[in-house]
Length: 105
Image 1 (cartoon, helix red, strand yellow):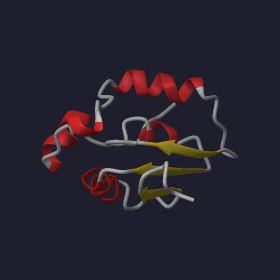
Image 2 (tube, rainbow, N blue to C red):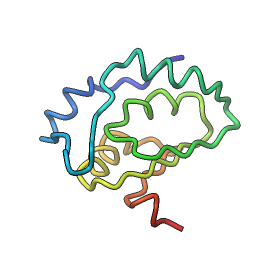
Image 3 (cartoon, helix red, strand yellow):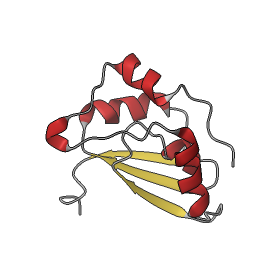
Image 4 (cartoon, rainbow, N blue to C red):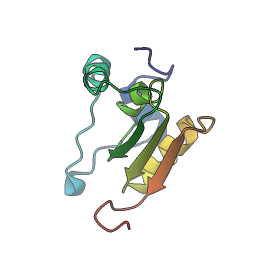
């Protein structure tokens, strides 16, 4: 599985000045090999639609996009939404939704 060519997760966090929010219990997946393995385990195909809840910095998203037909990523943190929208601006098969998954209809 080929991932999208993006900076490392720690580099993205530094670039956007983002630190984990302890009030939200944020812990970012930074190991690219683990993210790749998670995506492989899903056995996705080009027909699959993926709902990713809490994509954070997109560590897993970058591995889902090359194989899924479309990824809808729901993120509550406005700073992470900004990061995702900027980094994936030219990715038409990704929709980033700013909101609380527990409150979205």
